[in-house]
Image (cartoon, rainbow, N blue to C red):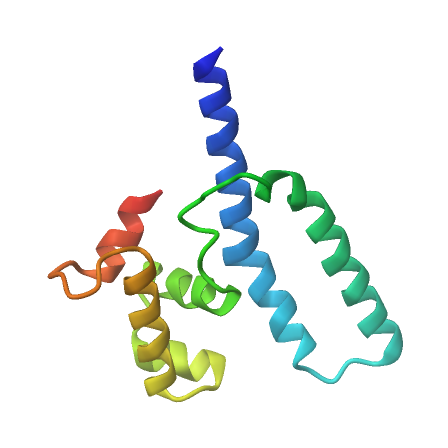
Length: 127
């Protein structure tokens, strides 16, 4: 019984992490584009429905992934997939210093700031 609860919790955490890493950043990016009224409405509905789907999972979960902002998730995902700071900055159309700030925040939130631990390696081993 305890194992089943543990497995359930792990699945819920992975669902939350995947949504925050893969879907939320795309929604945020789409919000920043020129959408007509109809498209904006559909995007708002999509976002609200997604929030409703994950809300039962997020209650009571202290997932290590949940503390990152959507942009931090996106940057962490790029780092995990081998993108350099310059490549990430170009993809997100921001300055490299902005990406360095996100990387620093990610390191702080996952507890490896001021440690000689490679961020990419650490992120790959978190799964």
